[in-house]
Length: 290
Image (cartoon, rainbow, N blue to C red; front, side, top):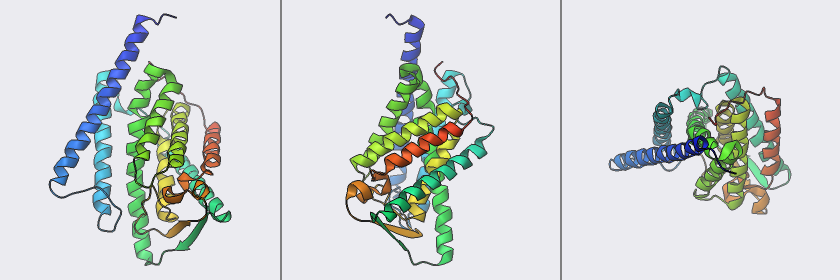
């Protein structure tokens, strides 16, 4: 079947704009990182002396992604808010997403503990320290969620929908999300696959609600619960000041091993539950393929 010229032009424009977006984000991040590293500033690690710099690094990434989105919105002649940020129910949507994400990680961790695949114990520390780190990681993971969701489910999802259609765009962005996480130290193939599947749920939430806020809330609460509350490894990294510490036991395919609970085969149940939770939302599907 011959594709109309106008549709071909729309697809080509969408592809070129996504490449431009990626180039701007990557180029800006490399430039800023190189500049800061010249002054001895690095954005790696989760030790007590490193968390302020790490959060600043995440904030910079969020600004870069927001700036790139703003640039593309000018090229598209729309508002930057049209790429998943415009939502009159943003706060409520984010809270529901956060509650869902927290319940999801809590169910997974406690389920693994119940099967003997995970051991939990309290980390000795002053109450004031625990409260401080709870706030620090809440802010940090909130920024991570904002940056990640805008980077994968913001402008790229909208633009790629014009190229591959809604389903194709969801698959492409989710595969990229999983591949990026596979590059993290301590990550496993199972964790990467789970990441792709969860990313598909996040993409579905954007199509379902018309915004990123449910996914941002879920993403932030999931990471906070996994890393600070339960103290599980996230891609092999343990969060400083964690309240509990989770130690994997038995087979890695069930416990998650160094990848943490998100590398567990049990994640498939959690992902299915998260997907089902979307059906309870009021549908506000926006046509982002134009």
